[in-house]
Image 1 (tube, rainbow, N blue to C red):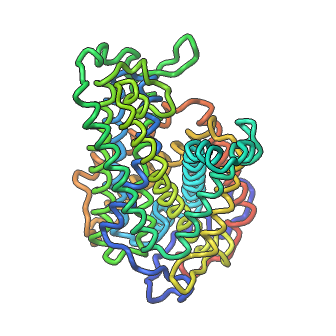
Image 2 (image 1 turned 45 degrees about the horizontal axis):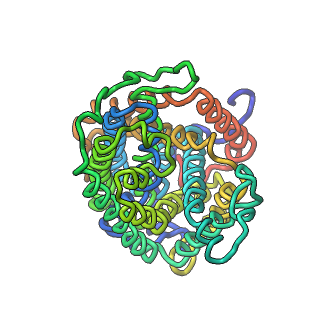
Length: 475
């Protein structure tokens, strides 16, 4: 009995079912190797974050946005180590939701799954809308398509058709096959990495030390200025955090990985290390080449920097590469969300009919279901004021995974771990405290929206999911 509501199994823990014991329609095909996972992680991590948020971060922290990247990257790296250990201990689809279900219990797992749904929905929708911002002018110029049907209501339009279209394309790719989608994703990731390398190569020769002074004009901690804008290194880190996560989507691929014990740690940790190095190079080149006041808050800061440096050709190449390669972010997070939905449906917390795979081993029903949800958000809803909610959902998941890792170190210290997090209590503790601090650094309005989202989720759980009968996969 909780709050006067009788629930069947709110505190029950999930038992991981061996693949051989699953019903055939619930088995995902094992087609991914570690190169696919690294590409999936880099595809998710390197996207709108580095292409746009460096300008937002610079407005909040000045040149010390470099330090904001270091802090956000360090917290994410610690969380990534916890993910790698849990992924090899529990090589099942579902990521943080599944780990929490196995280690803590169903109610907390529902909250984390509900938070992941929020995170992935907003990221997929926001990136689709951002991609549409590049595509819409091209469609108007080349095909004469009216802007009214290519912009959402927040911009005075009717529906954002390009955003819906790119989501439909990605959904189609994922229904064709996971390996085929991963191969295309890897190719587009190379396009993104080359574009960022070109930016660093072109901007670095313009580096001037004077552009880094004063290094920390707004201080370290989050402060609110007279204009009501929150600034400081940590205020920037709380937003820049968006630019780093995405590696958690790799953990959702556990059941589709050929050798989870080897490939998952390489994919999770490898993609994070690679992206931290890329981000540090891009951030240093950006703030060193030009005063942050000239590109802060720009929706396309890297391209703007190149144009202001007198390099329009490189700027156009970077913008074109973004149009071509941004769908990798949509693909990675769309993939992750569809697998979260699939696992929750297979566990009985969502309609069980959604947890069915096709003859090709892909969950077609749940992929189409996900496409309808994120397509509706991208096509109709204004996302500018609530995009930070994605950060809140991710921070909750990172805390949960780090807590699960520490619980298992106490509960099952001798359990087989093909990957062991070094200094687990230090790494896990830093991830938990760092994520909590970043959450506290988010705008109060964002925190309120996140609380409201979870209240709605709890009401749904108490009304429906928590009353179902216990399945064979729970204890």
